[in-house]
Image (cartoon, rainbow, N blue to C red; front, top):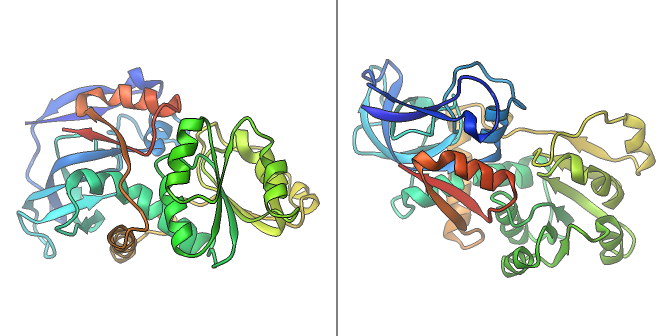
Length: 323
């Protein structure tokens, strides 16, 4: 018997319900994973709230770490007792135990515990593909990171510094600003500032080469105004709501800008790609470029409270649920 979260209809955090289920044996190609920690991400709130359409009823959660308990027919890579994590596939990570497609799992280093893995896998893989594959940030680039104290934001700051970029971060409070400065950002701006004007001042009027924006609607105007000629805006999240109604002529007037709205799962489409991203995350962790900043933990049953805190901007770093 295991406890699992599910939703029957989209809505606020109160839409999260719980059920006790008897898991069947893993089907061919599946493993049973007993989870030691579960990651909470904005994508979970998008599924719950209906921003990202999903077939209902459904489980919730994309990220977890634990131990393989059993394997189905045809599974060769995994054996009981091996440690594994996941940061994709069908939602359902808000659970004590679950059956998972074997090709969705990634191997975890012995030195990385479950809480750290659950805090880092999805957000770290997001940072990896954004910096190295999507934006292809180069040494000397100036990069603006919005919500730089958030779960992905603080990892982006460390990753960007490791590749030699100059980092300008935005945050909502002075307390968060101190954390981002301690994380290595070269400049930290408060959301109440005129972000674009301050960025132009910092860059001698030129603007930034890249904007990595996880906020969305609220920061889109500043991103347009802060990006240098032929620069790139990477809009990877919707914390304030999605960017809508973008007229291509706006990009021309702003300096022939490039813009992309990527998702991690288009950069992690195979088991090999997922493992490669995870390996990059753990390598950056091992060399000290990033750190697992777990700002808050909740009991698994308190997932709704975790969603409320995340959506209210009350969290710092990563949030994990403990089964």
